[in-house]
Length: 193
Image (cartoon, rainbow, N blue to C red):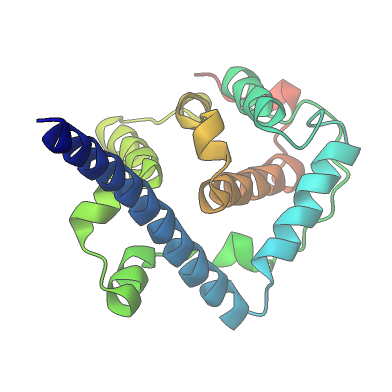
């Protein structure tokens, strides 16, 4: 009986570890596909996002490079739509983060690493993207505030630790920063919810 109990606990432990490892491996695949996509466009996604994250810090958009600080910015955007501080970061209008986001990450992961859609659908990233898509498709006039609120609600300390997840939020912030700065969005023209 004791042997059966130890064996059962061991199997449970290894199956949990294996699922966690599987999820981490899937995020690694997603990040590789994302990096390859942007490398083909001439961008080092890691370098670009690190620079942008540090510029947000220098500009006092965030207090630190941390989960709490990023989530605070997302909450501020959910309330006020625009970035809270002056916008001095220069972004060229032909930047690839703006012009051609990767559309087929799942297909890349599936084709290169044989990951099926069920595995993909269990990720926090998929759940976030699915919630955003569902909101946008079922709302006649989607609110930018609500979109940032969805990002904020889905960002957890655990998800923040996932490099791919965090980087995708930073890419969205990069795009929104561009809109706020270059398309004339200011506190006086903030769209209502």
